Amino acid sequence: MGRPASITYEQVAAVAESLVAEGKRASWRAVRERIGSGTPYLVQEHLRTWELARPKPGAAALELSPAFLAALNAEVERQRAAALGNVQADLREQQERSVDLSNYAKSMESDRDQLQAQVETVTSERDRLEGELRAVRAEIERLKAEVAGASQAVETARIELAKVQLQAERLPGIEKELNELRRENRELLQRATIAETRLEERRSPKGEKKPSP
Image (cartoon, rainbow, N blue to C red):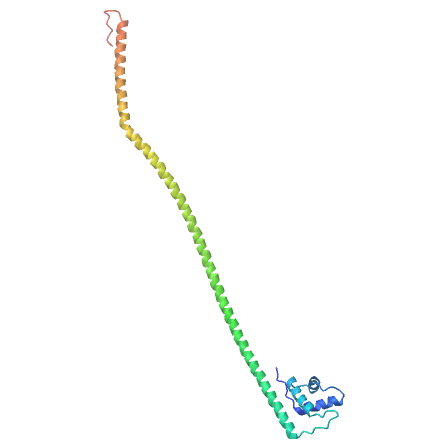
């Protein structure tokens, strides 16, 4: 944007006199619009000087020397330059602050992106660990079931072994009983044979011998 063109006191005073001659009010807006340039501050300063130098109605005209007007003009220019310098300094400061804020915002965005990446990494690692934990828990439950089954099998085997041991302990007594039964069986057979022989003898006539087989 171009810098507004500088205007002089003489331009402002001439336009103000022209407006008054036309019966119009010499406001700073009207003067600035008629000139077509100049800052509002500078137009107001020149217009204030013109109003001070202009004779009041019903009062004697105040004659100002050219030296005084020149000095007054110089002071107005100095004040304008000082005010413009302050405005420019403030503008530079605001621009520097704007740059600093922009850099800070970029830095914050970079930090935010880094934190977001770290959060995504931590979330992914958490999900992986949770999956591993579920797998470990499932394996623990499977092993518990196997241990329970093995314990049951061990208990069953222990009971069967106890039965076998009990039978093994009874085996000598059973064998003794079996031998006793065999002996008794032989005795019964012998008795039966003797009884059969006697029965045959009784059935045969006296003196008749049973033919030998």
